[in-house]
Amino acid sequence: MRSSLAPRFQPAGARVVPLEEVRGEPAWAAGLAGFAKDHRWYEIVADTLAADFDCRALVLEDERGVAHVIQPLFLVDQDVLATAPRWVQQIASALRKLAPRLLKLRILMLGCAAGEGRIAGEDEPQRQAVLAAATEALAGAARHDGARLVVWKDFPAEDRPLFSGLTSKSGGAYTKVASMPATRLPLDFASFDDYMERHLSRATRKNLRRKFRATRSVGLEMSAVTNVADVVDEVLPLYEQVRARSKLQFERLNREFLLQLGERMPDRTRFFLWRLEGRLVAFSLCMVHEDAIYDEYLGLDYSVALDLHLYFVTFRDIFTWALGQGLKTYFSTPLNYEPKLHLGFSLVPLDLYAAQPNPLLNALLRRVLPWIQPARQEKALQRFANAAELEA
Image 1 (cartoon, rainbow, N blue to C red):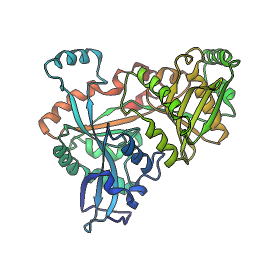
Image 2 (image 1 turned 60 degrees about the vertical axis):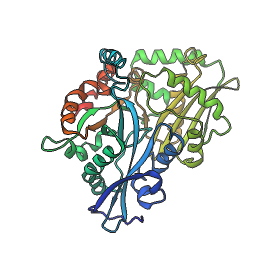
Image 3 (image 1 turned 90 degrees about the horizontal axis):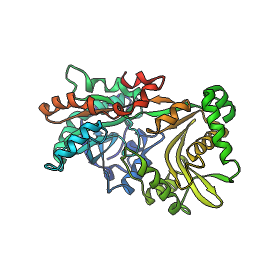
Image 4 (image 1 turned 30 degrees about the vertical axis):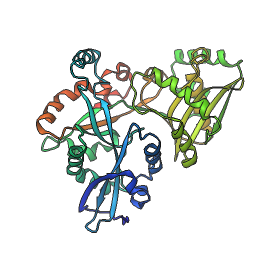
């Protein structure tokens, strides 16, 4: 396949293929070039996290078989009740003694296995073409691979107009629910102290200053690098400690993923490392794109993390570094909403769009999904000033 991009492309066909088949296609790189996680991120996920995800691509072609737009997707086995209310999980746990696979489904997911989803395309007409052509191809792929659900995973609110046709009452098969949102903080401050004075409550300022005084004399040292090949075996256990404490878990990074990021995306990848008397006690994996920094994954040594308030130290140091680089926005991934609320972040809504290939089961899904949607169980979300945007 060879790409020939056109501004008003009308696809003659759409098909799902292994991701390996589209690597090197101009359309593959071009359709994701404007995002922080470009085609390289998806390839790294496919190459290093293949045990968890079967990475594919939806290819939109013209009548000659030339690829114009390529949308990433993947197959995964997942417990759809992982984010359900506790009482629902208790009932399911009892029923799974008789049916161990109950609501543990094979799902065809559009988007990114490790991060928020993006609709591929160089412009809006191409992205509209992806959504218009996807329904039939995805239904066929789901049947072929035994997937019980088709899900567009974690797409930002700015894409809601594009998805409106999939959820319309006049024929849209998909149900939209709120996923766990990301968070955003503007970097329009002269310094971290200026941010605290102008943006935080008096109680939060007092609390942060107390925490930072407690760590001032211990000699923490921070460095920022693009590659962790020499310390990856120190970094990974810190990530595992944080992941083990998370109540919601999806992707699980590994040694090769961290190494490949540094090798293949050094222009965007930043690893922040904190050492205490030479020992690595914290790290953060971030992406830098255009005028924003994206705080993706955190690792902490919990033998000292709580006493040294490392969560807040890492935030302060990354914030200060980003200011020094002239960046304008600090994005952070879902979860840990309570501290982010007090730190003045706002929510960045992300949506799930789900459908069941069987029309009767899809009608049932429409009734059930709003009750088990991820954001429903996170009480702290309703205290953010822009919480209403989650359901807009």
